[in-house]
Length: 79
Image 1 (tube, rainbow, N blue to C red):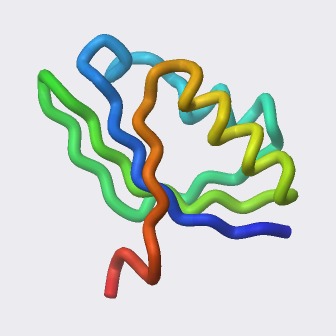
Image 2: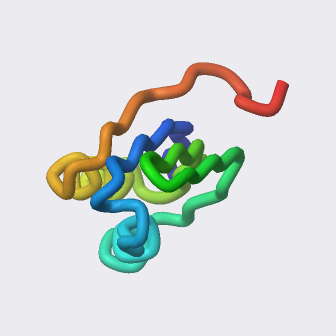
């Protein structure tokens, strides 16, 4: 099992789309929300992703192709 922490930045047009849910279901990845901030113009979400390494990678690729800016986070975001 792989564990990866990423920051997702959703543009305004994607804020209301259930992309995190779809990614989790499609690639069998367990998302754990560590931090979130959503406004009318942008959505920011820090997720810990758990799953098989290839599934986590495919899930991240799915989000990127959908238009989400995905950035790696080093360390524990809550420290």
